[in-house]
Amino acid sequence: MAIDPATPDTTGSGAIRTAGGDRPVAAEPGGPPAAGIGPYRLARRRLLRNKVALAFGALFAVIVILCFCAPLYADHVAHTGPNDNHVTEQVQVGGETKDVVSPTGLPIGPTWHGRFLLGADQNGRDLAVRLLYGGRNSLEVGFIATAITMVLATIVGLTAGYFRGVVDGVLARILDLIWAYPVVLLGIALGTSLALGGITIGPIAMKGNSLFVPAVIIGIVYIPYVAKPIRGQVLGLREKEFVDAARVQGAGSLRIMAREILPNVASTLIVFLPLMVANAILLEAGLSYLGAGIQPPNPSWGTMISDGIRLIPSAIHLTFVPGAMLVLAVLGINVFGDGVRDALDPRARVRIAAKREDEIGESEMEVMVEH
Image 1: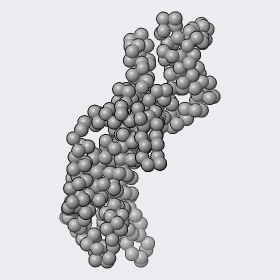
Image 2 (image 1 turned 180 degrees about the vertical axis):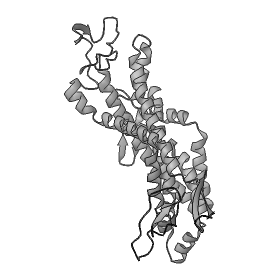
Image 3 (image 1 turned 60 degrees about the horizontal axis):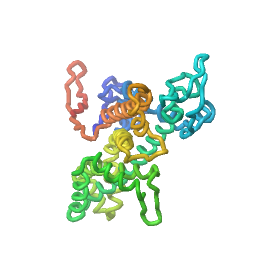
Image 4 (image 1 turned 30 degrees about the vertical axis):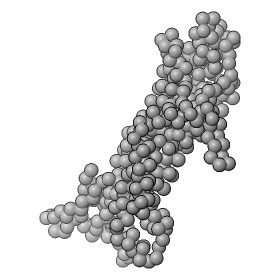
């Protein structure tokens, strides 16, 4: 963790300032020096300076809000549901009456008003409504899968790294086994098999067309990608002095892992969080495109691309619209994740260098972050 320690002010004002150029923190007259800026607060300041990351993060937030407001748009603007067919209906476009789906099977293109704003698909379903509902399903799967990955990977990484020995050997081999399979191929194999019979774990039963099935699959296949870095960090942290001090005070293994080690790997988890969301959304779209993800009639960006690719180039909007939304969502969260990583990088090494100031006659501490 990169930490910029607070340094004494050389102007005699009694304030504390940081070498990174942050605003001074005033100290009370006659009182003790003010506390330095914490690492998370400093990372927040760095992130707020990264306007590009904030812009793309706002873009992703807008997409999320629009998708979760899909029922409002469907009820009050489009007046249709995501699975409602309008094959035989007609719509007014620019004063002309047009078929929603022509006799040759070609769907109408964008009308740029309430109904069929972005056009219809080959079954006469409103593309804009399905785009928002499909985005909501894709985002729900991505968020649930990320939560599964982060929770299980944290538990496995902490357990394997702290206990080492036989426990580490067994868990590490299981991670290597999952790691050995390509993510897409493993997802297709699990998705195809579970789509037929669903999942039954004790009292919990999920049907094959449930959104939780692809979420569980994606959450499992990405566990090694987070658990292995966590395990590596824990292997080093368990030998630190503060862990030895906790053992001497009589703290048990669970308490040490939860209160001593977990806070020190929190920055790694924060960095992984947005990146895993992007990977989960992208993998869900790929699995749905191949028929191993979200099952019909539930819409998703992947299934919409798969359905629309058959009508290229006569109805290219069926593929372009969901593809563009998928690219924007993944790009937004990826760029924002890169900004979070730059602001709070657990791999950064801190070097404190003393620099002589001849004009003032005092030393000043400067923090230089090396990647």
